[in-house]
Amino acid sequence: MKKDQLLTRRRVLIAGTGVVGAAATAGVLTRVTGDAPAGSVPAGGPQARSPLNSSAYRLQPLTGYAPPRAAPRRTLVRREPLLRLSGRGRTMVLTFDDGPDPRYTPAILDTLAAYDVRAMFFVCGEMAADHRELLARMADEGHVVGNHTWSHPLLTRLSRRQIHSEMARTSDVIEDAYGERPEWFRAPYGAWNRTAFRLGAELGMEPLAWTVDTLDWTAPGTRFIVDRVEDGAAPGVVVLSHDAGGDRSQSVRALRRYLPELLDSGYHVTVPRRDYA
Ligand code: ZN
Image (cartoon, rainbow, N blue to C red; front, side, top):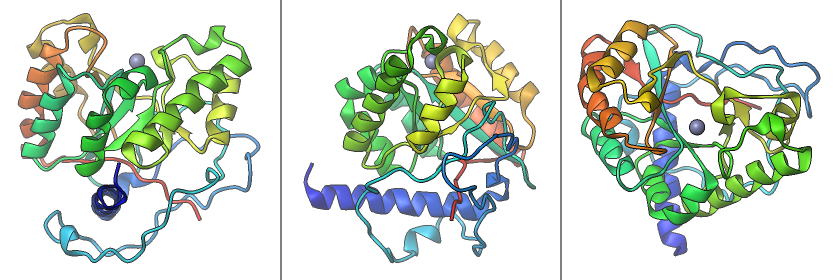
C-alpha cells in the first residue's frame, strides 16, 4: 500500500472515530469487572468533546497523524467480556462476525454506507488475509475492525501458545490491511477463558461480546432476524450478526430492513470508542 493511501485511510478512520465519540455518550463501556490491570488502570471516561454531526466531522482538519503505536496500549484484564454499552441516549452497535466474505460483506457495507452508519466487523485472520481489500474498504468508510482469531477455534481447548498465535497473527494482518491494530476482540462461540482475557489485554484489546444474538447463523429467515433485532433494541445494545461462515443472504436482507427502522425509531447506530489516557 502506498503511504498516501494509508494516510487517506487513516484520515477517514480518525474522522469516523471522531463522530462516534461525539455522538455516542454511550461510548462509555460498562461492566468494568477486571481484576489486576495488565499495566496501569485506564482512565475509562470519555474525553470531553463538543458534539459534531455527521456532516460536520468531515470538515474537521486532520490535526495529528502518528504512525501506528509500537506497543499496544495498556489494557485492563477483565474476567468477563463487555456485553453492552452504557450511557445516555438511544445508541446501538451492530457487529458482524467471521468475515470478511466477498459474497456478503460488500452488500453489508453498501447498506451501512447508504445510511451513513458505522459498524464493527470481527474478522478472522484467515479470511482477512484473503480479502484485504475489504478491510481497506472498512477503514475507508470508518468502520471498526476487531479480532475474531485466525481460524475460529474453540479457545478453551487451546494452549496459551496456540491462543496467542490465533490472536497475534490476526492482529498483524488487520494492521497490515486495515491500517490500525485492532482494539477489540471477540472469542469464537463466545467461549472465553482467563488466558484469552489476559492475552487480549496484552495485545491491547478489549473483549466485546454482545447483548442480542440474531441467530442469523441458523438461517431462520429474514423476518426472524429483523424481529430479533427490533425486539431486542434498547439503549446500549450490541447486536451479533454474521457476514461469513455460511449463506448469509438473510443477514444481508435483514439489515436492509431493520437498519432504517432503528434509525426511524431514533436510535443512533454507531461504534464504541475507547478512551484511555
Ligand atoms: Zn464467530
